[in-house]
Length: 76
Image (tube, rainbow, N blue to C red):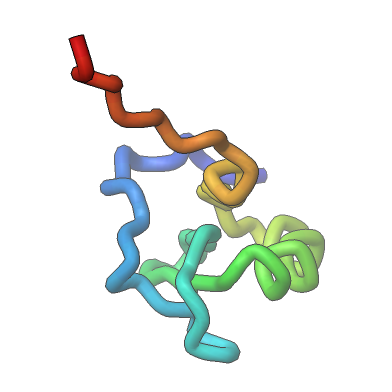
């Protein structure tokens, strides 16, 4: 059983995957304290095992498919 995920800051470009060094989009908060950061690929790979060991998962990988806002055309 896992507890409620404590509020965490959004992951930034400075957060890197602990496995490969790519930009992190997944944070696993471990039961004993501490956390692990993963890219989307490694986050998917390890999520099941981490959850089964009680980790809470913060998954921001949906940001990879978001459409960025476009600049407003100011040619009036």
